[in-house]
Image (cartoon, rainbow, N blue to C red; front, top):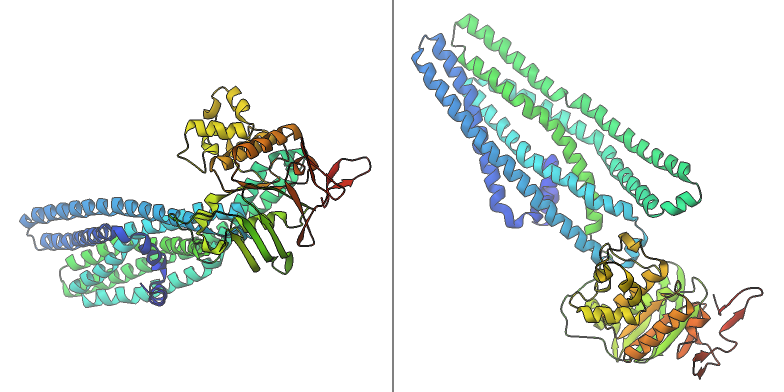
Length: 591
């Protein structure tokens, strides 16, 4: 369906808009959708026969034809049974289709999140994204469920009610038609008044999630500064706003939801008065009047449900707006799963510049890292070191210049191939909930136990793992909370090593590891990964001394640190590497 067509349909149907959104996620289940609609049709027709049969039964009694009452009673039971069976199919099918829809939508949204570029996450909060992928999707699922289970049968019910009333009396049908515009007007006003409130509710729910996550993850910081009361007040303020918006929705529902059945009740009263007067004056059969009153009684609940359906619709529309902000293809990477192109060769930066907004971070950088070379990179905090290594893995793109592997620009390599060749151990280590083995094998799930143990040995974490009661099957908890900072870093290094990368980037990845263990890790990497180019980003002189050469990043440009000479123990640093801080430690220039 074309987007223009879809927009026009949404304007026409209004409350049905979210259902149109869902159709793309039910493509392979269209036959089930039609089956639910057909069952709803049959259920409604069967149910509509009941008031007509009751009217005929009353007419038979009035005419003293008692023998036919039993016949009508059996027909009423049969019609009710058929309606009940069909309604069961409707309810079960609606639940099934709503779950299929939410399953497909969640996978789609998750896929979009994984394809988003790093810049997207810099402008989002994890709490808000979590609320979009949980509560917002669930709100749309509830809408699909109630639409299929109740709204579509209700629409059939209203249509068949008019036909049935028309068959009984033109006047009854006319009274019914006069109530329809009133019901539509009430629905439109109700819909318009609550739209803004639902959007605010979604926003506040995202903020609640954000506060919760920050305080759960950062609970030690909050307690360390005795900031519990401050955080409770912030959370209470947000939940208070969330409460007020929900109360406003409740006030609107109380006002407008009751107006719909009241309108239907008023119409039924008019029919009762008019029909009763005509029946008394003319002495005619009261069966049609009984049928008409019963029809209005039957549609009273479905019509009152329309008010709740408008609530569900506006809630769902607000959620869809937020979901679509994730589904937009902007800021997404193109990831191909299979590729025969694998990066291989020397890594070269040629006149590369990079900007973030108006700020120039890297300017006209040129350098080369040869295969098997161990290169150090240092510089002051926020000099752009992490931005530089993010360019190598394709997390960011240069504004100008070229980055080559061998003789091919990075842009010619599929991102999936590039990231298999380039392994990064970042400053902030992220470990997943699961076992030690799961975390080390994350980038190479087909690795054998021997390969996993070898990677752990290179990263100098094997002895610690073997000391654990369950060894590699030990669950390390969310974010590796049961491990120390240095242990988390070494697990992350083992994870990177196991992918057998051609280019290994250690972005301050040993900052929590003691210098002796750090040098042992570097020696192991050099010994076992002779064809891997290593870029070590660090502030520590003890780490940089191991490099073949060191580049310093300052004012957006790189320069070689002079006076490096090989010794038996590693590399000796000349004056260009050191800053001597009175009363402090030696650190690399530019820290």
